[in-house]
Image (cartoon, rainbow, N blue to C red; front, side):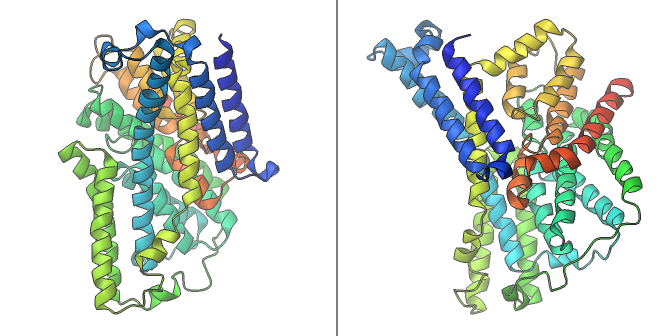
Length: 452
């Protein structure tokens, strides 16, 4: 293996370990994530001449840059084509995340979540956990696992005072959201990739994966029903709304809540109709909510310094989580750009052979490495002539890549969002949630193989 690839693997591994040991090192996980991403790409472009042969570059690229020498040609390919190409994909996720977080903050500022929280009277831990998990499971299929996680974690902050109790609920929200997203073409980015690529169709994936995905949630939930019986939660003592939100009229609160939730539900519809990336629909929904809030703000003559104003809402966005997302996805994209992920997939294919075992392992690997490049590599290894549309392999891949990431906190977009919003440590999740997620993942996989 070339020295450059060894260095990139080493840098990624060290960065990954630093993220895991965030609390022990007392260094925020965002810093090593960004640092490892920059260093991986730096090593790649410095040694690109040893890794890329000019004659393997696309003909259109060679024609477009015919005036460049070999060294400049390779550096241009890495720096301007590969890096910026990945950045475009990552940027669409980040803008989606920013839009969703801002909409949720808007609804929160106006006390909109009271419409839901005022109707939830459960104090039993088991009862509330079932309500939250089932709601997250079905919401994720309609929205997606990332948006659902953001909304549901914002919701439980209004219902649960104890941070330790809230962490446990946040972990199960990740499991439920990932399970719910796997059986819907718009519920998880990897399922969406397979849907757009023609590997699966809408009705077939819903029919085949609904029950396995439900089993993936039910297995840990049934265990928790037994292990947590008799426990109660500690609701907030004070009003769960901000002082400014208490001054908002019920009419204005309902308007913001309705526009915000409908805006989130509109995103998958917009994507289906226009075929534009989901972040475009999210930005449109945000802009509509923004205009509505400004009209309400000025007509009601609220103070511009209030928490209800857009400038104050934007300041509450969790920027470190967004930057962490940028770092970890850029670092993984370096592994994909150098061909390391594709090599790993090919090694699995040659050494194992059984496609069901390979796909099952890909699901477990997605807990360590982002599931998007893993699915992309798998789609590149097996074409539609080998496995036609709606073949069992594609369906099982959608399930595995969608739910396997729950086994580690950084294994899915939903997990990364929860990690940032509630400051969940890697080892806390590994100890308390990962075994439950693994139980569900194995249960759903066995159900698919034996029953579906």
